[in-house]
Length: 348
Image (cartoon, rainbow, N blue to C red; front, side, top):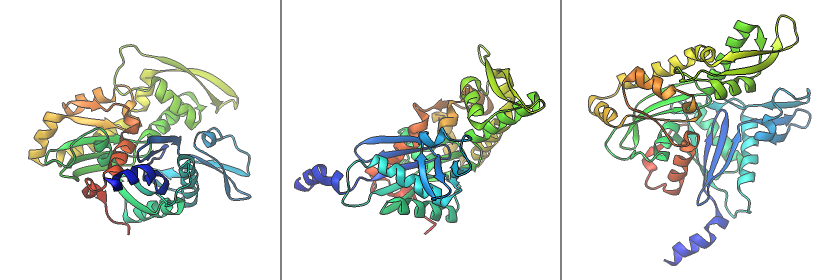
């Protein structure tokens, strides 16, 4: 009893364990006994002369495409894995500093969410980056498993639960039972590829060059993967590739749906592959329970309806799908002994 009281009173001063969803487009951090304390774009701006960071997160995102030659604003994650080791380390160090308001006597233990298809080399890179950024111990958990825990699915039970996690750089489809992934399909297609598809469609059809942020905004405002009850229109601005001057055009939601066909069909193909390799006993569980969608990509209008038509299964989009992965990792970090079996090994 005394020990529990001591830990409650002083535990936060000794160390605060953290869960990190280190995503391609966003990074979320959950601190033990506090909940989600950080949700920032995975962006860092560095001064090339001093090799030091100038800004991270939202502040750095505002600099994308607007910097002078001596400043480099970039997204250091690509397709769910580290593209620039030094920049990720520097960015994480800043994020952890922002979340840990008080001085700790011991460095935090961290659980980091990673794609289920990550290689041993990529695992090692994640571990090293997070350790160098200030963690004393680093554990890894597959994103779809963390998402399943985050939405309250019984991952330790002998029943099949299927999760589709659509992030910025990857789409993870996993069938989970008895604390493990029974079948999975991991493709490096996500929100970024959707943005790129919109950008290329506008460029090809209208000879108009738009930026990544504009493409993302179009996707959020009028993007869909299933016919809408009322189609929408939107004005967009960019550079006319023929005349070389700024120009404004109008695009419709039906055009953007056409632009998104390729990345969406790749996600559907990956879902079919995961379903085809599902053992019969667990397939019946999916028929009963349906499939849960998480991640920012799950917010694309009509994606659940289109997938339901494709698979003839019940599809549910999780509440607040962007936070499901980090919430699940937070539950795991607060109950490590209960969820020891779901942690990934390899990359040592």
